[in-house]
Length: 417
Image (tube, rainbow, N blue to C red; front, top):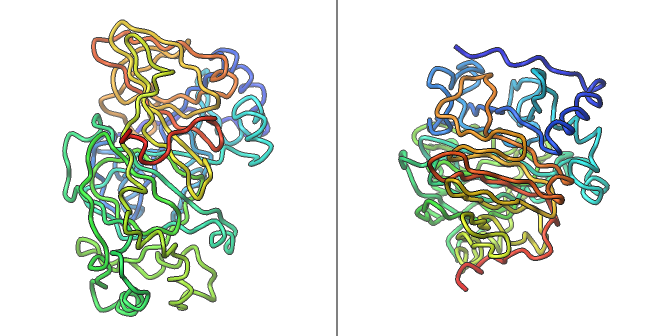
C-alpha cells in the first residue's frame, strides 16, 4: 500500500524551515518524488514506482507514467490534485514546496539574475515513461500560449540507459512532417478527426530511438514520443495540442487538440494549423538540426569522473535549458562546480553529495521519500559541491539548468566534431 507522505509546512511558515534546510545541507535541498498520471496513456513501468501504486491517484485519473524533478510547474490535468506536478523539499520530517522556497529566497536558490527576470524557477524536467507511443502533438509557441495566459514549451529528450532495460511497444518517435507536406493535407486530417484514424502519421517520419542520445524539440513542432523512458528537460509549462485522433486504438478527444487555444478558435482549422511552426516541421534537415549525442566536457572531467553534455543548443537563438550527465567511478570523488542552479536525479549507484546521501532506489512506494533527488542551489553550485562514489558501481546523476546559465554551450551538431 502507498505510504502517507510527511506533513506539509504552509507557505507562510516556509522561511524558517528553508533557512534551516539550506544551513544543514550547505545549499543543497533534498527533494521528494513527484508523481504525475496521464489519463490517455499507458505507464511503461520503468520509473521504479511499486507495481501496486501506478493507479494511486485513482483509476479514473489514469496510470502514473511521469516523475517530475525540481518542478515549480503545475501539471495541466483534468481533476488534478491541488499540488500535482509540484516538487517538495524534505527537512527534519516535514516538507514544503520548492515553489514557495523560490518565492522566499529566489536569489539564493536560482540566482539574482534569473529570479529578477522570471520571478520563479522557469524550467523543469521529468521521466516520461510509456508502454507505447503517444499522439502526434505539439507544444505552443510563446506568442500562441500567451493567448490563453500560458507560456510556450520547448523541450528536450535524453534516453538514459539505466531506465531502459526494455524497448516496450514502439521504440520510434514520429517528428515533424515530411518535406513537401501541404497545409491542405494537414487540414484534411483535422477534418477527418471523427472518421477513425485521421492519417496524420502518413505525413510524418519516424526516427528510431537510441539509448544514450537525445533530441531538442522547439515549440510548434509535431512529435509523437515513442516508448523509451525519457529524461525531459523543458520550459516550465504544460501546454499542448494533440493532432492525432487515434493511438493504438484509443480515441483522442478533440478537446485535447484545442485545450490551450482560445475558445472561439476551437473549430477554426486555419488557426489551429497556424499554431505550428511550419518551416521547422517540414525541415529537410530535421535530424541534423535537432538530434543530440553526448559531448564530454573536458573542463569539468578528471581522473575517475566524467561530465557530459546531454542536452544543449538553443531554441530560436535563446539558451532556455540544458543538461549534463555526471559519472563518478567507484572510490572516486570530484568537486562539482556549475555557474547556476540545477535539479539533480541519481540514476545509478550510491554515494554522497556534500552532506546528503545519494542512493538509487530499486522500488518506490507512492508517498515514500527517497535519497536520489537534490536541488543544487545557485550559491552551492557556484561554490562547488563534493560528490563521492561510496558504492561498487558507477555513480551516475543527471542534472538540468535554467536559461542563460552557461557562457559556453555546445551547439546542436557539435558532437560530430
